Every structure is written in structure tokens, then in C-alpha cells.
Length: 311
Image 1 (cartoon, one colour):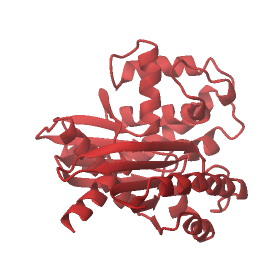
Image 2 (cartoon, rainbow, N blue to C red):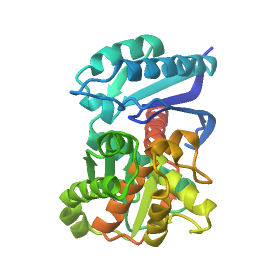
Image 3 (tube, one colour):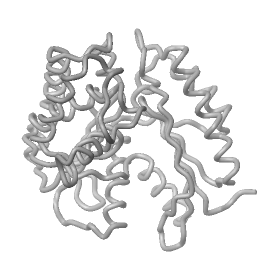
């Protein structure tokens, strides 16, 4: 039986697939019912723009689990969004057709700019929910598996939105192909990150910002490790990142990476993610990033709810 106020968002990310099921009320408040995240690494092993057979199989296996949960919750409205890996894959249609058969709903492969806008929407609504309504410009950065979205906005308004072609899975495959960690690999990833962030530097500095917010898995994973070590009280700062980089160089391979607070599913992409965050701090001359747990899925859910209520 369908529950008319139950909504679901499915995020087909380049590193992980996520399902969020919520219930909404007439006061436009969302209450989480279930959240699932599975490390699929759809972008891993991509060659000549082709998703690998293994990655496709991991993705479809995950979606069978999601389809069961969506059905059991009687979700009335579902939106499924595909991001960087599906934007870039020449064989995306092959995957999407099977995904739609499994889920019974269309898959929307969104542009990088639309992804950025939805991320900002999720962050803005979360700040309102927590009554953190600041009348100033926010710089919001979301480092994913295949792309990084970087946005400047004020309250609910998205002013600048860009998607850059760097992410923790793509950088892992490019700069740590043998799983070896050393200064050279980290430096290469860091320099490439700085070059890409430099492409938006002038535009974004002219717009300006008063606070910096990080969302999604890479940022959250780094904060959790820093908190576990007592290097920060909250968020991420530059000196703590440098300390963490020195510690990371104590591991010879990605498989050996072990930090208190670091989940098993983030270990293989921790080095590449750290290099990207360091590049972000240095290129944009940041001092501190506050972490927000809301991102793309929450943006999708808020827009689904509004469309249902506004009819």
C-alpha cells in the first residue's frame, strides 16, 4: 500500500549509492525513515569512458536492495539521480535501462550544475531546520567520487554553481593506480586539484563568502578522523590537514590505511580525498570548513516535498 507522504531519493554516485526514505508533514518538515549507503564505486576501473562490467554488476546488485526497501515502505514519490560517472560513461544507457527495470522509476542523469544546485538546496534547508539562517554568502563544497561541486549562495538562493572534474575515486585511479602511497603520488593529486580549483578562483573571490561549508562523504570522513585524534573540536582546519598528511605517509599502501574514526568503505579513497581537500584549502586560501551532513539527497527530497505540497 502506498503512503502518500512517503518520499524517496536515490543518489547514484560515483563512489557510493545512497537511498533516503522520509515522511513529510504539512509544516514542510522531513522525518527520516531509513537511510542506506553502499560503496559501489561505479567510477572505479572506467577505461575509455566505459563503466566496467564489475562496477555495473555491483551497482545493479545494490539497486535490487533499494527496490525492496522502497516497496516495503510504500513510497509514493521517488526521484533517482545519476551524477558524474553516469554523465561521463559512454555505456551509461546500458546501465540505466537495467536500473530502471529494477527500480520501476526513471533515472535522471543530472548535469554538474544541477547537482551543485541541489546540493546547495539541501545545505540551505538543513541550516534553516537548525535555525542557522545567516544573511551572508556561503561557499559550499561537495567532493564526490567523480566530481566536485562548488557553490556560492545566500540563504536559499544559489548564486554561482560549478562542477569540476575531480573526485576521490577518479583521483585514486589516476594518481594511486597501484595502491601505493608516497609523497610523489600525493603531490601529483594535490597539484592537479589546485589547477582545477584555480579555474573558478577569480570568479568566486569576486563574489566573496563569509563561511565555508563542506558536505558529503569525503569531508565527513576527514572530520571524523580529525575529531578522533583530538586535532579539531569540529570541522576541518589547515594545520590539522597537514598533520594528517604526515600521518598518512606512514602507510605504504591504500590497503594499510587505518585511522580511528575512518570507516572501512572510505579507506581506499582517503588519500585521494585528503589531497583534494588540501588543494582546496591552499588554492582558495581557506582557514576552516564547517561540515554539514545534508547534500544532494536532501536537496532532492525537499524539492519532491515542495512539489507534492504545492501540487
